[in-house]
Image 1 (tube, rainbow, N blue to C red):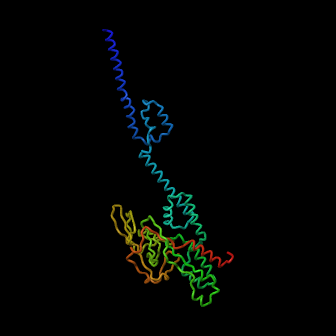
Image 2: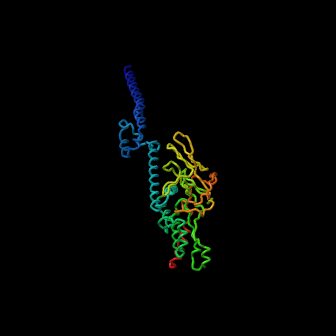
Image 3: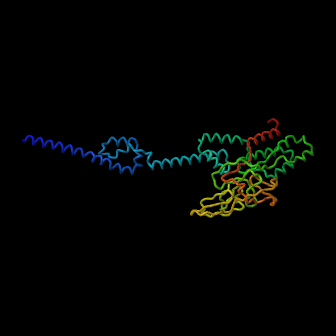
Length: 378
């Protein structure tokens, strides 16, 4: 009997030991899991650990390193990681755009800032090598560009009338100035008629009197480009329609911007010129845009909207009466030849700019021809 009692006691002891061991497993897992939840809040720190640190951590027993889950973390799922990635991409994008702007300035130092910005938008997805190639091709098309300011129209006519023997030289200079202004917004080129000056000695006095003009200003429309700026507008192909600026200045250039007096206008080398019918925009205006009918709209920080006049558009009955020093801004001696257009919506194109009406390939060919007239060896 004593033997069976002893066997029962030993069996009970073994059973108790096994029961205790079985319940200790969840308890150990709990110790390892609790710090895991705590460490999840510091995942940004965990992501920064190097591979060697993770390896060292995994070599330590679990009870000494309950946060061994670091080696299995998925950093791509981290909000902090995604934010850092977005910041890095944004910084790289700004640097790429800055590099494009520098390249454009190097190849075309006299280009309008707004046109350069449009080019930046166009080339933003291209590599710098591709952009350099394109800019070099564009530059080579205008390698005959001259220097200096444009000849005023009246001076051109005087030179052609008083110095007929120098007609070819004047024509060459005009063509060079066309090429120089090929990237100026709204520029109107001088048309040179080579047939009128190709052989002036073969013409009789009467024929020379009948063909006194070898050039004239062309008001045909230039190519249109889209612009992301809400204050940029262009005019349709109606060549007699122009923007009216203060001081009775006329132009086809439509890169309007906010001026120092808070009106919308354009900026030239000689200063600022506001649209003739624009009014000051409040200091707290956050968004300014030109509507399809020419109305200038703005919105302030509180969401309230208002109007600040409009972009003035007019028609010119006789374009030959217009005079210009640069081919971009014009004046007219007879103010009665200008008619205001109230229906600006029929002529305006928003988020658009008009480029110069210069065909660089044609002008370069014409230049070569004119030079051959003055120097047959060319």
